[in-house]
View (tube, rainbow, N blue to C red):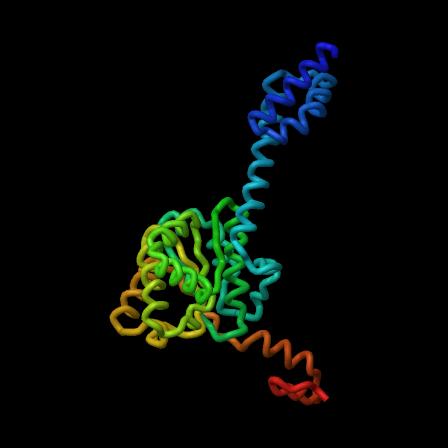
Length: 269
């Protein structure tokens, strides 16, 4: 084995040990280019390190996207802002910068009837934040509440809520579908209280605050939950006609009667 081959083998082992896969893959190409173009050593080293850092950022974002469980294909680019004229695209884009409100543990609340794009917008904001390096978790509120209830039964609720602290933004979709049950709403209230002024939440809701007595079992808990959520919050009202309904009407075409729904538990003719 030549001296050059020995050096290459040693370098490969060292880069494996240091966990620098990008430099391991790229150094032959860049050293060859550096030799041809007469790069100073500092330029070669800086180039390799910059590529390693970029690769680490890419892998980190990839991991965070997998953890986030965002809705597939829901981006700000695919959201139809023209269908929700009271929603400012510029304002939403500024929100996705994230630096100031995320740092303060502020919240975002999206209100509107079903089918207007609340879940789409919430997931799109989450995606934009993940791409900027933040950690996000998207969950249906009922699913997360059930997990927290199980944690309480296992005497591990405090630990479960603490684990959610690793996420800069927790997106709770469809909060109004939580049943008015003491066990469910108490763990939800504890989650809201634990994140208050520390970690941010984005919540979508079909019902305005005035109807949240259907979520929490007593007025005092409702008032306390709302107070914590709105204290540092940006609220978006999306009170427009359901775009799913509009799409269905458009699909019918002019003068075409709506298709009769097949009753449950029966087969179509």
